[in-house]
Length: 328
Image 1 (cartoon, rainbow, N blue to C red):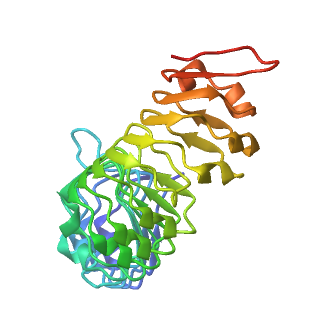
Image 2 (cartoon, rainbow, N blue to C red):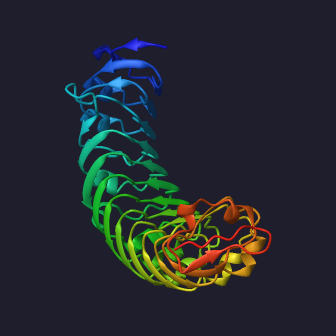
């Protein structure tokens, strides 16, 4: 494992194409002379102890396709955490494909050069303090496969244009200040497999059009102010801490490979479907804080569920050879 600082003289290696210093103990600031490495296409600096801001000169590297600055500690010498905004010249050359600056204290708005960077393929900005209206900050990216914006301070409403990212498989925007409704246009992002909009301020009903996303295996909508009924077209959910009403959709009983089901903190009523007895793959369940009643399914996930996972209902219990539990 190497340590020390990056010397200013690094800028003299103008023919350098790959520069990887990740997972070491390098410290100090990233020298501005790094912008002289105009042949550089890959820059890996993650998991070190660099201090100072991300040099604006990085924007001079036109061929840069991969920029990894993840887990950098101390972009500001006072508190040992990366701080400041992203370089306004980032992706000026229009070739950045992979960008990761996760888990720092980066602040400010996303630069316009990144908004218009059509080459983006994989973007990870989570775990910072970025801000700005999310509907104005990002555009349509034809090559985008994965983007995580979670744990920041983005606000505004989700743009219907996310549905035009036809190669997008994962969209994660949890724990921000997003408001408004979930756009039904997301149905056009047909490759979407993972959608995490949890812990925001979303309102309204869950669009039934999301049921058209046949490749979806992870849909997280908990911690919002969603209301209405669960659309029968929707099957794979974490909907806890919303205001969903009505009966449990029949389709949930057909998910034989489902492992985790959280329907807590709603106004669901009636009994739990008898078809839940076939969900043998289910390992974790939480149906607390509803108005459910009747017997619980005769499967391990329910029979071994904690008291907290079943409490605050109209009356759920086991029958037969199992001891009787009534959760109120």
